[in-house]
Picture 1 (spheres, rainbow, N blue to C red):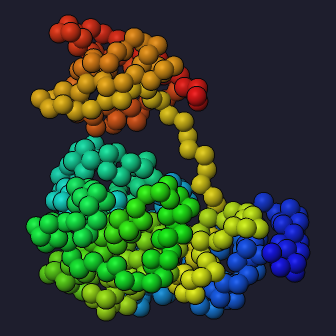
Picture 2 (cartoon, helix red, strand yellow):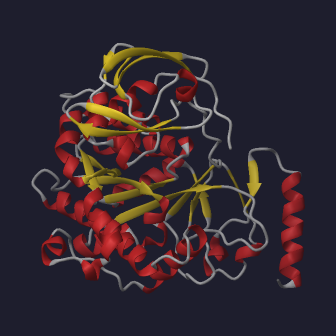
Picture 3 (cartoon, rainbow, N blue to C red):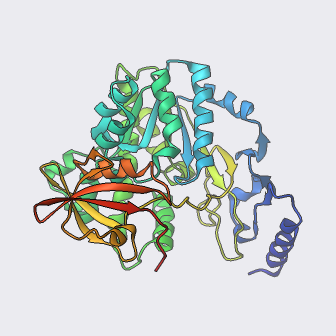
Length: 409
């Protein structure tokens, strides 16, 4: 590392120790060569909103004025960060305040085949449990629904259409297994046009692949999946805005930051289809970077503007520990759920549950599928308990389980 850069890094690291808790420096040493850093403030605090093109910090009301110029507004998220979702809700409420019923919400979290379920949710026809069950939330998205609950409740209260953007799980699996070139004609016909030619998009995902994946894997198939993921979401956006239901509406799109950073994910692909003005807002977790780390916003070899605006947030907090049974379970049809494995040292093992047991009910609530168990356990806390009825070798029997914190092995 250049001596001057190293000295700058050490100086900033020392000054960071003297700052108030809410103020953290962006460490620029690791990204000193990135063109994008030239207009970024030398220091930012949690809560700041930065206009990337100029490097100016703006208030939320000033950011909100930019919403008037866009038909599609992308608000990125860190999936596990509550502050990220709180900001999305803030933008949603401002969107509704400005444009009323003339808006819709597009969400990465839901697969396109579940659009009828979302429509029924917004219309007040199904419960939250039914929404989660029928969209297979836990199995197909997996993140805590509590992080999204306020957004979904607001959409229901105001009757704002929620649009499922994501590719179906089955089709994504096929691409992951075969790659785009390995799909048959029928499978290819299920997809919109997929662009795999973007030079900087490919370079960005190569960095992601090297950082987070087993590099012995097949990058080309990984890249195909990412392009399918993003082109399907872009196609979902353009299709909705072209329908009578979406004509003239403004769309607020919620998806992971990685799908909007540098514009080449979903925004560029949707723009190619619609040519409608759009805006991107990236939620940026402040953290201390080491001298050899690159900042995701300002990669040395991607000379593009990462977003229109950046909203600075705290890093994700440690996930709250929840009550778990400590079993592997699966649906086998005929309204039956079977235990496939019992984890060592788990509440399930302590209570005597065994592989092959059928779970019939929890606290008197009949169990028909895995999702029933997942939803019921959401209300349980460490230190609590649950009465389970199982079937073992054709005999029904009660089991009482106490929830304790499992030791990491």
